[in-house]
Length: 356
Image 1: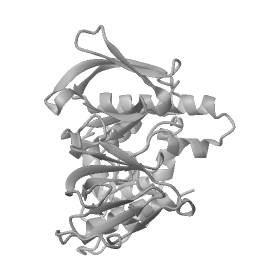
Image 2: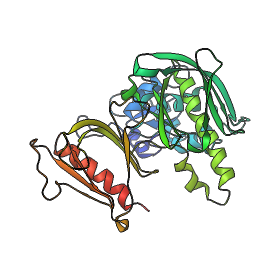
Image 3: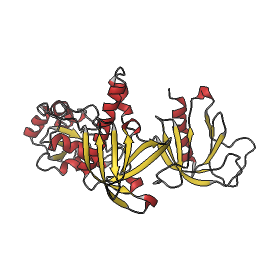
Image 4: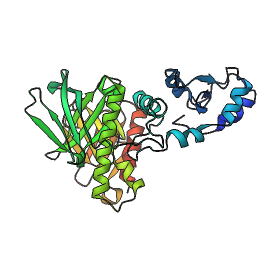
């Protein structure tokens, strides 16, 4: 399994594994591809079943294992498969985790085992440029429109054209970021692209009908970002650069916000916490192109603090869990839907405040 490359299941093939048990983690490698010789989790087993010519799946607990298959699995395993199928994974290529969306996992597995993109014998070319069409959410969030996009790592820009193809928007790779947002966009291949323009974060929401195409675009953006970081910061070790290629928001969701005097009416806003930029942005709607405002989150030593209550002297009618974000300039007051959401936001904000 690309997410769990362990060999724990190896011994289970030669032992009688007890049935039942409701406490098992679906991410545990309790399945196997007996054609590839690897142990996989329940989530990945479904993807492997859709590759009948490449992979064949059995359960370690439920299926009968012939002696020849047990011997085959003993002589192979995840480490052997990794050495073969992941011999030349580019440093910028995103390897999905358990929490990532389905299309990332599907295309990672297909890239490895079906297309064999990372074999040692493959002459892999970095996608220094890419051109094609993506469906982009238009103004007013009314509908998605087909637009031509162009990415050039060499020139350090990404561009997209208007309907007439005569107007183009130029985006610097320096501030470019991309993250999959399946639920927010409402499409299984939904991708959110962000960049800085005139000092503001600009959001683009795009998708493509093809899972391979949208993941290729995502990794092309990562390749361009990697090229930029590698050439701009040549002395920085690669393990420090990789996490800065692209990033997800640490936390997103609705909270209620009041004004600077704490007497204004609370209004529901969509918040996004970007730990790398140390920014808490808020939007009227999740799919807005620009934020209504943002709050810089500094360090505790600089006077930043988050508390799970209201500021002294402030009273609100709504009995909802509160958060007070203390900054050197003012105190921001938010209301959460419930105690669980309050704790999640406090933990996320404290994580940014305490990071170096």
